[in-house]
Amino acid sequence: MTTLIRSIAVGAALFAAGAVMLERARAGSDEFFPPVTDPLTRQECGSCHMAFPPGLLPARSWQKMMGELDNHFGEDASVDAATAKQITTYLVAHAADSTGYGDMRRWLRGVPASAAPQRITELPKWVREHREVSPREWTRKEIASKANCVACHVDGERGYFEDD
Amino acid sequence: MQIRPRFLFLAALTMMSAAQAAQAAPRDDILAGYAAQAKAADAAFAGFSAARGEALHRDRHSGGKPDSPSCTSCHGENTRAAGRTPVGKAIEPVAVSVAPTRYTDAAKVEKWFRRNCREVLGRECTPREKGDWLAFMTTQ
Image 1 (cartoon, chains in turn cyan, brown):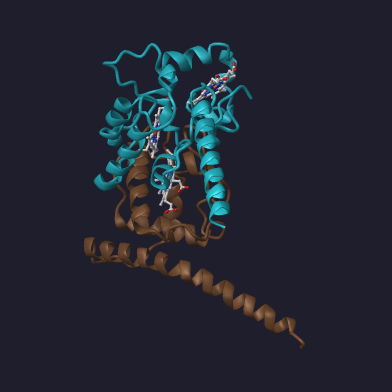
Image 2 (cartoon, rainbow over the protein chains, first blue to last red; image 1 turned 90 degrees about the vertical axis):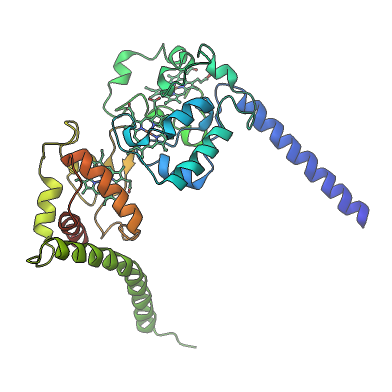
């Protein structure tokens, strides 16, 4: 009986390890960015635009942004101090240069270590990946903004940004 | 056993109105809070007006951001239909009839009045304006 339980436990552990490795492998590509799982961050950062996956920016960018929410790209996105603290902790722990999720440093290629870019859409990698998108595409009415990722990446909310 | 459809219907009706009442209560509390503040600001305050709320909602204002001169810039002309943010994300309708869970969390309501009134009017809304606007939405 105990051996049965033990083998089930071992199987489950192997399975879980496999799942983690799969997650890491996907996170290491430029196509999968684990979506926001923290409900508070989803709620506070997902009403004006999609809740951007934290792996799209380095920790220092999130830290800077979270300190300036009262003037967030010209809008007031401020929250109370306790909420801001919790969201910052989450974003920083899952940032592109954190070790929380696979290695997404490749996504930051070309970003100087001293810079804290605020726009995903101005990262050298993002610009490169989108250089073949025609200018006409960006001005389509349904797009509204480059930051409207899900207008083109229909599975963006689930973290997938591959060619759709 | 014979179940009377009439009875079932009545039971369903009672359950439905109980659920609606459960949401109406916090909304009424929020409105009562704004009424008390409005009264404190102006002793002549005689209640909220859905008509004034509708004007606040639909008018084009100046003083805020040029891209969003009206509440309808994001919430749309039709209160029962979805709106859209400047970034292109859909916003659930604002009419209580189609969004019965709205305006039940006082902190959420306050947060968005603060943000959106500054965005549209360039200043915070007064308690009377907030109550008028909510009164309008409850008729929608």
